[in-house]
Length: 458
Image (cartoon, rainbow, N blue to C red):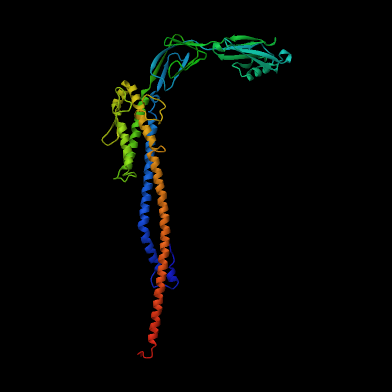
């Protein structure tokens, strides 16, 4: 906008401040239109801020729901074992409360063979000449492999066998204080993994230290045999590692730590209340909430409350809604937890609680329209809001597009006002020239009349 009164600077003025007049006229055009655009910009930025707060609050709630939307989330199994030196049992989230009797009859062993003694690791074998070893692996229909030993020393034998990548490992052991060495061959556990060595030279022989055998256990009167000492397919959700044979049967108890779920539900109630409080403040007109008047935001708040107070899409037999376990919504719109009711439900209807929250499913996804339980349904609803086609995403894109348009409107307005200023300046300049010409004519006429010969002057 103009900063110099060009009209008066050129001595063409009519005796008034044309710069101030032009600025006032231009500003009169700018103020209402710019005010409207600024108001729209402010409203858009306020809405974006409100959406951001809503997304953050809902995200916190979803994180809490993800701890309750799978059946495995409700399993916190502790294992008690009366013979810990004989076996170790660990449980994962798939394990169930139960008591088992476990007897270890035998543990799995690997075949071991040992060679004769050598005075050093580099003692020549077979006169230092290369030779072949045949290693057969398997109890029935064994697979034979010929191993070529080119460096005919104890070290060379070990390297050749290990380089063959067989299920037999060679080790060079220093067995005596005098520096003597022996070669030990170790197979894999299990009777099916036994092996034999044939065709060694006369100065290389192997004798058996240990035969290959299977592990055998009895779990609840059923016998299981495996090639290794790890059983992960006998008790659902449990891994059994064997160390020695048991003395009679070990009593193994799987207990579900329900106190962990109680703590999780307390956190769920706290987070849900924080989310509902945030949504309420954002849509509250009286306090000037950023999303006041946004009907979709209000609908989101109502939908969450409906899910938290209604019957689960996958109700249990006795537990069908949150109020059945002591989680109720008050008249002020927040959740409260009755711990006495919750403790009773946890003790009597634990499986129903799992069903109500998770639909007894694991690894839930957002695909499809299946009933997912309270936690699964609400988690999907929240995720859908922020998906690529969800309300929050599409609304943010729309508002950002509007902000861009408002910026373009401001630029267009300033361009229009610049042209208006230039037009006003030109018009006042033309007016000033006319006034100046009239003043000049007046002065000329006055001078002419004053110089007339019959002018009565003293």
